[in-house]
Length: 177
Image 1 (cartoon, rainbow, N blue to C red):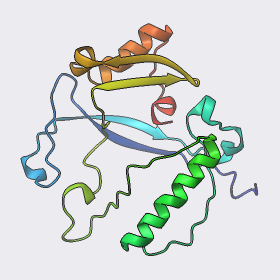
Image 2: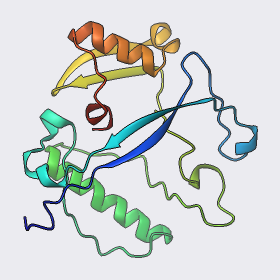
Image 3: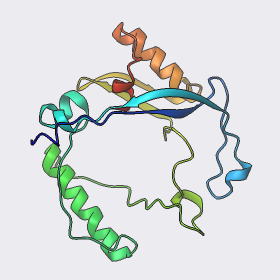
Image 4: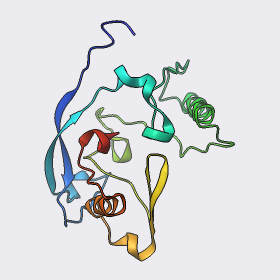
């Protein structure tokens, strides 16, 4: 890594989270109908490029890779499908998985005429279903489903982490990792 690459580029910004206890309603195709009460939190987004070689899936849950693609037409459906196959192959190579299945592409844009799920994210959010599996340091520490999961929100999950691990998860480096 050369000297220019070693320069740390952390960014201080604000992230909008739904107000604790409130239930947000989001209409991607008609955002003006959405109810998204926000609570702004200052965070530091850390530049992890200088430590990229020390990152590992089993410890950090992610890695940084340089993986060039020859796909350039991301609005062409055939090219996008080819890009998905390339991405699946990368994930398979990095994880050693026997099979990788993607949920398909999501092309985000704020171009005039964009609508619905193609617009940039409305705010910090977690897409979740009826089950949440929480990993920490490569191990499952929480598996919540059904009715118990239905009434929970992100602060509840963070509280369960604290109870299970005996430590508070309040470091924005960990939350954004």
